[in-house]
Image (tube, rainbow, N blue to C red; front, side):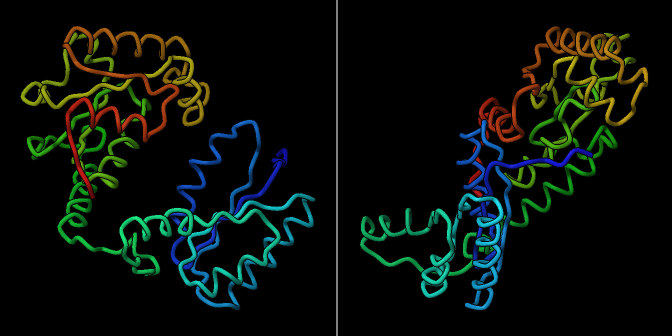
Length: 276
């Protein structure tokens, strides 16, 4: 296997999980898609000793690669934060960048609580996410039509068009109960959706995908099969789009869109607002 080479290394460091630093860092680094960046998360830096280990690791990468690493930090502890600045890298302090100006604007001090953004501060919202995840898992790929009336959204589309990851993302991030149903050759022959869906048609949203990309994805799962053949993929995509068009179902192509973009479009289409 060919070894992947990188132009630079980025570290996401935090005295909590590091998820906030990593999420923000990913968004920023995505703007530089011509540069290959190795991304490393170092969580739970809650002591000077752990900070020293992180500094050594960062500096070693800099020496080996001949370029100083990029460091995205959400360190809250001021002593550890200051200590980490000894690392030989571009230090981007996300909290200092945003929290300090907000303290001045709001004329109050922040709590400086480690991991506060991931605390379960709202039990009701947390429970809603868990319930939505369970619902989406139970209603994945048309496994059951029980309690389908409780769904916020029902996704339809051919196999491997992105229905499952989108359903789970909506559940985990927004507490949306999303069911999903595959459109299969039997549906195309009848020129109808699965019968159980007609009672909930106002909740349906369709996903489609370019046939060539679908063939690539399916070949990863079942190489050389009819299921993955370009001819079959073209047939299924064309039939699915024709069916959705005839049924008046809103739909979009997932070919070049991220899960975040797909989910945002769905929320906007249905006018769903969730702040979790």
